[in-house]
Image 1: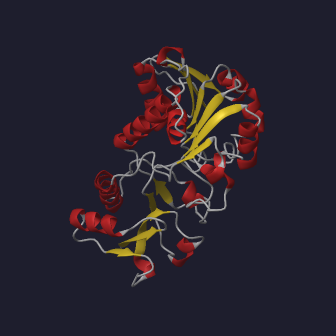
Image 2 (image 1 turned 120 degrees about the vertical axis):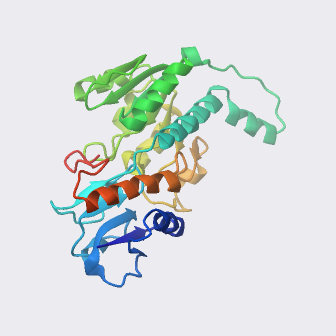
Image 3 (image 1 turned 90 degrees about the horizontal axis):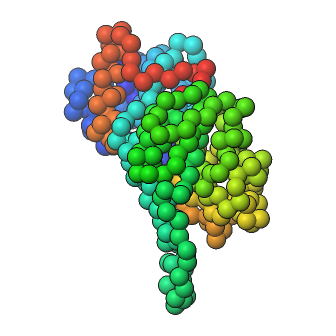
Amino acid sequence: MSIVLIFENKDPKPWKKALKKKLPNATIEVYPNVKNKETVDFVICWKPIKHVFEQFPNIKIIQSVGASIQHITASQKINSENIITRIVDERLSNDMWEFLLAIVLLDLKNAKTYIQQQAANTWKQHNYKTIDETTISILGLGKIGGYVAEKFAQVGFRVKGWSTSKKQITNVESYSGESEFVSFLDNSNYLINLLPLTDKTKGILNKNVFQKLPKGSFLINVGRGEHVVDADLIDALDDAILSGAFLDVFVNEPLSKEHRFWRHPKIQITPHVASLTNVETATEQITENYKLFLKNEELRNVVSLKKGY
């Protein structure tokens, strides 16, 4: 039995160090430096290279170091014996909420406009919106989305959310299913995407959705880059259907320097930093799962492959 870390676009060193401290007797290796691939039964990964799991014939557990598993299912052949688990961390939820609150408030109070005016030595006042007259619409009311929705409501925003099933969240209006999707979009000032990426949600942020939003809505995508149809978003911004967009996730990361998003005046970009996994708390969960695996007990935060989350 052994553990292998397979990371792309993330430094595995702090993860290995933290795990060795918690599991001093375990064999923990970092791909591609693996002595015996046949002994590997527990994989810890982030964005593994395509088909790399095929090098390890005896994988039992696949542990994502983030909340998402799409980076695994899109690049690997998963068999029925594999169990996929993910990180569920309240700290991630709170970090996401703080990030989104900052974006909304900066837009509400015209911060970007004043930064541009300062650069041009322009003194001009603009009207602003207030929290109590602003509607936040959240796509996805899972663990993170539900937490974010509740926190926005507590501050005083009008909040509604859409998901596959009805949710009971204090002061949050819940919509569900395809039949209620258009109604959910009505009166949205900010549309925040926190959906998991599945076959059904891929490309959900497209021209049909943008055209059903009130003119001047603002899009925030912290879900996955594949949720957005890039060309449709640019058209919606150019046609003033949307007032702006804040994007933290992209189909290909890092975002290509040639991508049109970099230069669009109505798009703001951050490098996938809305909520960063904390190595210490995440390795606590991974350690617990590894010990449960050794005892042949049920693991924590197991993902439904049928649902994709």
